[in-house]
Structures are given as C-alpha cells and as structure tokens.
Length: 162
Image (cartoon, rainbow, N blue to C red; front, side):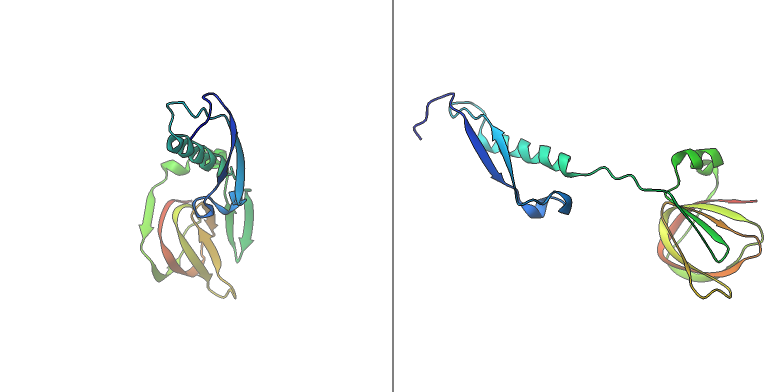
C-alpha cells in the first residue's frame, strides 16, 4: 500500500451487534482515529482496544428505586438502601436457605428477612393472590400468619424473629 508515513484517516468501525447489549446497539459507531500507516502499532491491536473501550462504555449505570408493597399482611421493601440494611444489622442476622420446594409455614413471631438469593411465591391462608418475593427484598411477616411457601429458585436469606 503506497501511503505516506504520518498521514491520518477516519476509521469507520462496524460494531458487531451481537457482542453489545441492547442499550448500545446502534448499528455503527464512527470513531475518529489518527493512524500512521508506518507506525509499529498493528491495526488488530488498535481495533481490540477500541472494542474493549466501547464495551465498558456500553454498560449503563442503573440505580433501582426503593419500592414498598404491603399485601395480605406481608410488607415487602424492594431494593432497600444499604443504609437501612446496616441500621437493622441485617448482615449480622443468622442465615437460612432451602432448595426449590413447597411447604406450609406458620409464624410464631414477627419475622423480618432479607433475601440474598431466591424466588418465592408466598400464599397466605385465606388470601386470593400470592405475594412474590425475590433476591434483594426486605420482607416482614406478621406474627401468627399461616401460609404456604412455593420456592421456585433456591433461597438464601438473613432472618430475624422479634
């Protein structure tokens, strides 16, 4: 290729849409880059670094909002702030877990728990609809409640009885 050393060009890179998340799939990105054709940096290295940089930029920062739901006597706080978990001492509470299963349960005392992992439908006795709880939820079950736990994804949780 006959090209003077030190010349500049604009490089058009078509991004492979299957390698980027849906938030960043724009078909193509134009990246202005000065490339010296006589330079010791091979094109594949430059391309690799460009793709890595774009992948890092493609991941959005998402802050989930805290949402409190009360249904059938069960209070669920979705995405509680870390300050709330620290205030309650959640990380110091004992842990309990179970594999996918279905079982009845009666609360002899008020329980507050924080799900680290899992997905559960809790069917309070006499309620028409289940209460769904998942990883990241802070949940309060009232004293005396009888229900059935239907565990779809194994549970790992911190818990505290009052």
